Structures are given as structure tokens and as C-alpha cells.
Image 1 (cartoon, rainbow, N blue to C red):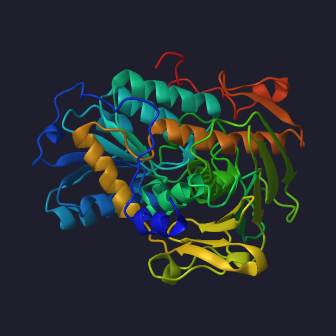
Image 2: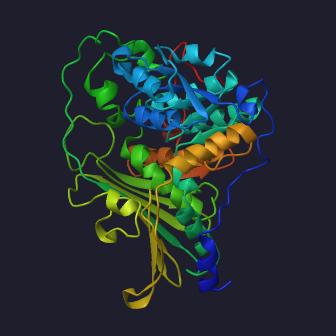
Image 3: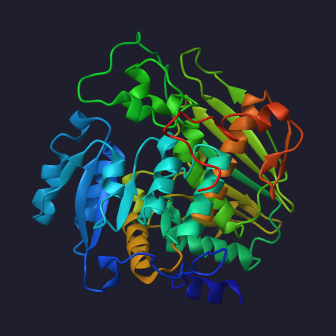
Length: 451
């Protein structure tokens, strides 16, 4: 196939990536089995992302939201009433997600909690016979992510991870373009997450506010005194709850890089450097970070900043139009270096361009955001029991790149050798026992060995 033939066909290509047979059957009776029946859902975690995505699900005619759940009742606030006005059916406000899981009418849940809850909440939901749309990153640590995969397989659930670029035709076209050989061999990929930011400071510890079940908010994370700067506000700055901006935003670009290279196996080794370099502040996670992943046939680098006001995400006026970003100052781009040419690729509708000698653009593809398509893919799979575009194995592997990259930085730049079969670090005992590889869980909130 030549380039002209490829570009003529690629806009129509839609290829789902799978690791095995599609999920076969619902193992419990469900109203969603009937083509004309609504899928009953609960929303777990109603911060900004939970509200936006929850409303989007609620606005579909084939979905009914039954629960809005959050450990902080004040945070739930008027949100159930907002949903009721959309769907003309009441929505229950609850504090404990287990109430939602115990309801046999609920077919599926949207999990938009803090990252440290993603794994256990998904496992509990699978054990209760619910399908799951869980936000990225899939997991807090590598071991936990594998347990999520095991739970999905054991209970035959549909689990979609919120990595919506998997449902984007332009990203699928970029993958197919690279596979066609137009760039030649690809020895190097550079992934960027270069954003602005400032100093992060914590106030004194205090009592938890009325309406917040703080022990429930902590869940699987270690006990610590309440502080307004880590609960709700700044949890992404602490290892106990997150993997920093690499986990929050960078996982999207890392996932795209995996996808366009054919979902390659995990790297054999990782090294990294960085830390709190730009700011001497109270965060635990890096404000500057460089990671290198050693794959069998290529090297992938990841670079992160939290200090550059001149770097910007792809603006809204580009994401859904026939425009392309200003690549040098695009904060979340991917650069693919082949032996015949290079590709700039943007996330969330950023599109792509291919350049050869003298900066000549030889091919390009405008992008579109596909959050709605990603949600639709999940709901279609709830009904059909097929494998969704960003199924849990995909989400686990991409999240593992985050955890490995953060581990390399936390080990002071040590090169970590990784056994992808055992998902274990073989040359560094400290890294192998780090919380980002496997954490200790609080009583009552334990991810079990046998899910």
C-alpha cells in the first residue's frame, strides 16, 4: 500500500486492540442485556472529573444514573438534583461506594475517585458483578494493576480505562501509518508532558470538615492527619495517592506511544532522574523529570516539567477543527523518529504531521476529541460483552510505565531491570519493595492476593 492509498483508507479504519477472546457473557442477570433497556449506573467520586463525565453519561438516552457517591457529602451537594433534571429520575446521594455495589439493579459504575482508590474500587465492583469505566491511571501501583486484570478475567467484567485516545480515529491512523513502514524503522520516541506550575505549600494539619468521612477518603492509603492541602486539593502531589503529573496527564501520552508502536511488551529496563528541582516546596512528586525506557527494538523517553509558562496543552480551538498545534510549544506532544521521517502527534484531538528533509510536511491528519466515542464504546461493550478499546490489560500496562518511571526517579537515577513476565524489578531490592511496585494496605481496604 502506498501513502496515497493509506491516507485514503485510514480515516475509515477502526481497529480494536485486544489480548485475548472477548468477554463472553454476563455472569448475572442484567437489564442491560436487553437492547432497548437502559444501563443503570452509579458515579463513584464526584469531583470535577466525576461531575463532567457523570453528566455526559446521564445525557445519553440509554443510561440512567441511580447513585452519586463520594466520601464527602458536602462535595456531592446539589449534584444529584442536577442529574435528576437531566434524566427526570431521582439520584441517590451516598457516602460509601459499597452501597452502590450491593444494589442488584446497578449494571455499571463510573469510578472517578482519587488514583489511590481506582484499584480497590474496580476490584470490589467486579466482585459485585458490575462493569466499570475507571479513570486513568488504572492503578496506584504495578501489583495492584495486575490484581485488577485478574478480577476482570475471573468475574468476566467489562472494564474500560478512561484513556480516550484509544477511540480516536486519528490516533488509530497514526498507528497504522507507522505500521505501514512510511517512517521506516522507529528506534526513538520522545514523549512530553511539559507544563507550567508553581510552588506548592501545605497549611497546618486540622480537623476534617463536617460531612467528610476522612477514613473512607483515605481508604487503601496509609493513615495520616487530615490536611486540606492533600485531601481534595493537592492529592496529586503525594505518592500515597498519586504518581504526580506523570500519572495525571503523562499517562495519556505514554499510552498513545504504546498504541502507535503496536502495544509493545513492557520495557526490559528503565532509568530516570529528576525531583523537586524548580521549586523547594512541600510536594513529594517531581517538578522536573526525565525517564528512559529500553524496549527490544527502540528507546522511549519521557520528559516532564511543572514550571514552564510558555508550554501549553493543545487549545480547544485546535482540538475539534482542521488545525494543528504549534508543535515546539505543545506541552503534551509525542515525537516519533523513524529512519525515513519523523511524526509530531498530539493527544485529545491534536492530530499529526509527518516531516522529512528540510522540514517538508509530507502527510498530516487532523484530530478530533473522542470522549463521547470512548463512553459509547464502553456502553456498547456492556451490552455485547466485547472487549473495550482501552480494556484493563491495556490500562495496566500503560499505568505500569508511569510507576516504573517514578520508581527510577525515586531510586536516585538507578537503572532498573524489569522482568515483564513476573512484573518484578530484578536488580534493586529497594525498588522492588517500594509502594509504587506493591503497597501495604489499611485494614478493611486491602487488595487481596486472591481477588
